Image (cartoon, rainbow, N blue to C red; front, side, top):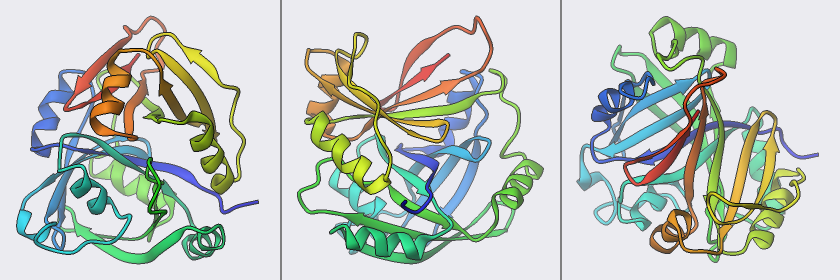
Length: 275
């Protein structure tokens, strides 16, 4: 039995995070300005679905980023820099309350481990948020592992605070949930095998996805799904794999309302499934 992990958030790089408030409002999705990560030159806007969220991250000071400054190996900024700071989904973060034990677990399994690292940012209302991050990977890894976060507040306290300041609130589209993130991969079997090993979970059977034109498998993380797709015919998923490599490419949002219109939307380089 491994360390318990919960989906925390997906990171999507955009040139101007503040513009996402109006863009997502047109889709009936509530978004707020986040804050600055003062030491690494980035800032964000946030879209919450209870405690799961999307972080729309951008740059306010490129001099604090590679190639001007060094960064943590296997960290989020390392991935963003490797992608050339191109708009699109980059990584996901999983939440834990046992981050030190997780670091030991990943090291035992042969991964290179960085951290836990103490982090913080100040919200627009002045409150200082603090958390720990853990990064891990292998030099030859195609699809980066998630990075891992441990918040300094209990889930109940975070939920109450985020609700009180209007970050967590009703969406015009309905009671929207963030249900899954999908990744493009080159070798479905090998990737799923690695992820099931370190997650200590089992994957579903491989099936064919007619819409995205490829084989896929799902790992369930509680009520959240990690979907891995190996595209084998020309189409948006294969084009994404060819242009961005093995990365998250799709986020699934569900309004929970029967008869709600279903659509795939391309937002700043990646896809969102709205239903």
